[in-house]
Image 1 (cartoon, helix red, strand yellow):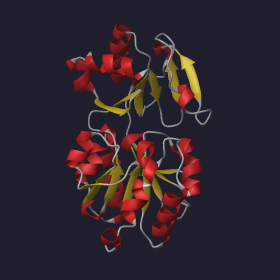
Image 2 (cartoon, rainbow, N blue to C red):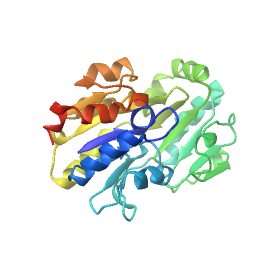
Image 3 (tube, rainbow, N blue to C red):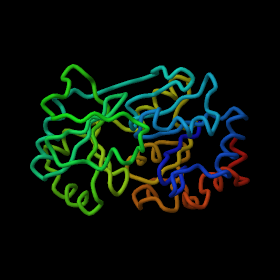
Image 4 (cartoon, helix red, strand yellow):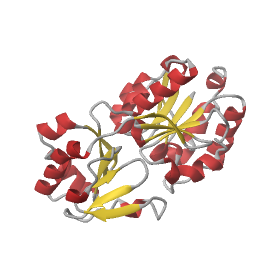
Length: 268
């Protein structure tokens, strides 16, 4: 199984999959290798990528919401799912209020932009690919389960918010800076590794049969846990430190460059 982060890993800086990466992944997929996209986004937001890579066979799955939901691509059925209640977001809402930060809270279908806080930049990231509702925190449905929350702002402001995270906030969530302008808050034990473990178990496999590619903090778990963890040249030092190898950057077809190496191809 090959598991791939998207932003700054499989995707170029223009948010596209290069022809070289596409052709390489399609070839391996047709050889029977499981190609699994691992993202913080819902599946509808990356459906064009699933279609581009032809990941629509009966045994194709996607890890979404940074591990909280494993989706069967053909029918969008749920293989594994875990969520957070509204009450668990109270600590984060209080923190966002204190530091004047925006906040978006996602269930497994859409995003709720919290209007009693500073306006968020998150909706602009999706170009209409995902439904957004705008409401105050008090009106958020207490009966629903939520996948994650996001603070999206200018990178220099994210630096400020991150520096001010309290021990209470750090204890309440698994926090990852997935992009310079995005900080994600998940259930304390949630990670892409959780979703991948469910998927590997489904196939009767273990982490020794997994190869992963990533660049950022939300990829650390799967890079360190995999039989072969590959860091991009543009990855953070933390990711490079736990990886087995570093490949070229996301703008240099780094995924294909590693997969097409002669020593790598022998693994398949």
